Length: 109
Image 1 (tube, rainbow, N blue to C red):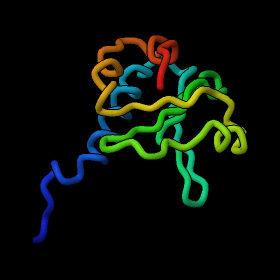
Image 2 (cartoon, one colour):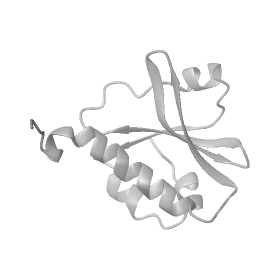
Image 3 (cartoon, rainbow, N blue to C red):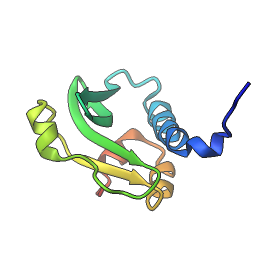
Image 4 (cartoon, rainbow, N blue to C red):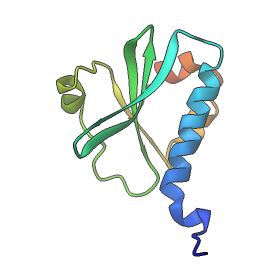
């Protein structure tokens, strides 16, 4: 069996940490849902909706930040909400939030 250490797939683990935290904050609060969006070769890692309306799109980057997508891409997809970046530089600020409303209110980017 050929295996890879988890550390070598850090991007996936980093994204999972962010997604797990979002789901934990939304647990039991049915008005919130977590989605992702993909169109051809473009994607947004997470889109938080409240009552089926997009509130915040999150792009997660564990390494060097090159391109995080654009609000134009979101708008063309019919997703009208702010786009935020969660990276190694701000992950601790993200993870200390204890309420989904706090995540939605933070001045991201």
